Length: 389
Ligand SMILES: *Cc1c(COP(=O)(O)O)cnc(C)c1O
Image (cartoon, rainbow, N blue to C red):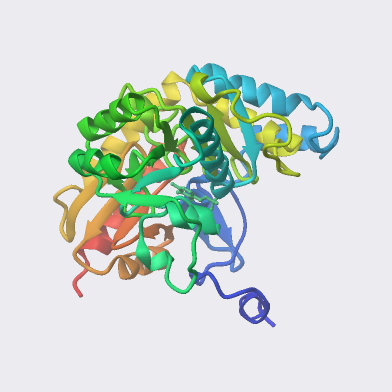
């Protein structure tokens, strides 16, 4: 049986895969089983921040692998403590809880908001408000947080205590707060799975102000937008707000599973012994890889991310077959005249791997994609957009 046949027979059918079998690669180049090279414009959905098996990350991970791969959270390990220090110092926040995924990071944030509110405002104050069209994960609680009904049907009942308001309409949030005791408000500054939709800057600031005013915990979901992706270390930094909890995952680990809930001053000590945990959380190998990622995201790299994002926009905005370009930095969505899946299919045939998000072609290339590789990929994408039906 081919890999594809084996996969289709034995792996649960939750993913519609493209007909590409990746066997190796380096940086922004993926190599297929047939020996064909592809330019990777998806980075494993924004995970391989510095590309496939990049040298610094491989060195950091293998060094740690040969020391100790896991000890449990009953003992101290250096990579976990060092990564927590870096995330705290780089955000001006205080403490970090580590899990293994974006959903787990958001679960932690929701528990923090619930406990903070229960202690400060009583146990009837538990509602978490999120935005319509948001995406926060696939567990039953983070699905409840996800403001897209298409993910909910046939999985009810979901965890109670969630409300969704329209992004951009601050009045709806004010109105809701008159009838509902709000424990926390969770937003993505750029809605990734929702179609790479950047929220309005004034709206983001108004939400942050309102959260402070009603003493609700402000959670920014940076699972996809974080770790340099938008041209700042975390996307909230574009807007001058101070979240209480920043959740992140995807690009943090550079390719190994890790999730983090970074806790600000107000909530740093809400969770105590026994309140939360995760067997693999803070795994030394995952953390060693993440340190090598975070340490390379400096001002020069972030400026480069913005420059490359501007280059892609300038090339694609107004190009034949392109209706609009949305997003921030190297997190971009292209609304195409042709169906996005067809454009992506043509790109694969021409050696470029892209993603979709709702009705858009989504680009999340490695943060360090070389200029010449990027411009080759963009010209393939341009031709695919321009192609006649
Ligand atoms: C991917 C994603 C998640 C879920 O992350 P997992 O690691 O798949 O659990 C949550 N929030 C956002 C914004 C995401 O993009």
